[in-house]
Image 1: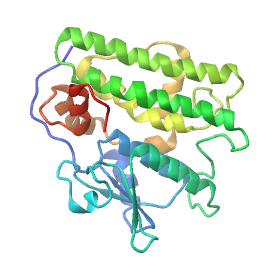
Image 2: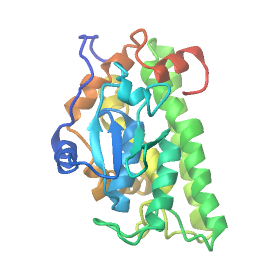
Image 3: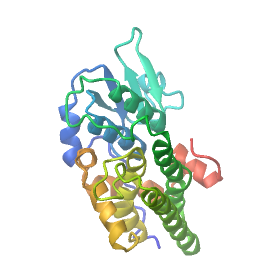
Image 4: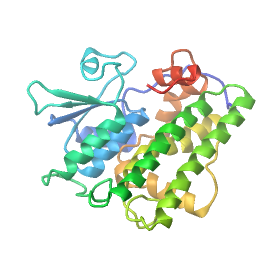
Length: 283
């Protein structure tokens, strides 16, 4: 059930905590500029990938609700994340989080001059296309099921809809776990934090921002508690404790303030919220 009442709090316009320190460390011009918003989970996907893959970038905070002209030049709908590739003349642009993470993976694995935290990949080697496909199946489950289920649950206003939303979100989590277990049963354990010895995977990056928000936003506004079970809890701890993910996290209050508009389903909260209310595909 909804806890509390709508206090009219607004979304934040600057990171806090560890994310602020990371943003400040990436405030100088680079070949890649990430146009982001501190509360946006789609942005966080890209940010985690940049951090994990060790790609130099400039973090640039924008207000996606105001849709500044410089953002619209990169992203026709005015959505974040967006990348500006400054090493082209004129600069080129990319938008959509999954496309951007794909691009960054290809860029990183083709560049031996990466500067920072890792020389790894989010995928098994190209010599094992089946293992890579399993990771993509997991990511597809996140995008098709987990992400929309999160918003349906958070935006539901009456108790019956909230109960239904909670069940739907748990089912989406269980569906993802089923795919993790399938990969493990088939012997693919090197990529994915589901296995304690696995490396951060593309599917982990796709899922992490919403699992993280389940631990604060859904917990606060819906009283939600993640499913029990040693394996699942271990996965969540490894995922949210991963250094690349932690470097992109603000303090809890930022998320509680920024998601109040979703929790009380204010009109025109976002294009994502409007799509959920209309029962259409996410933008």
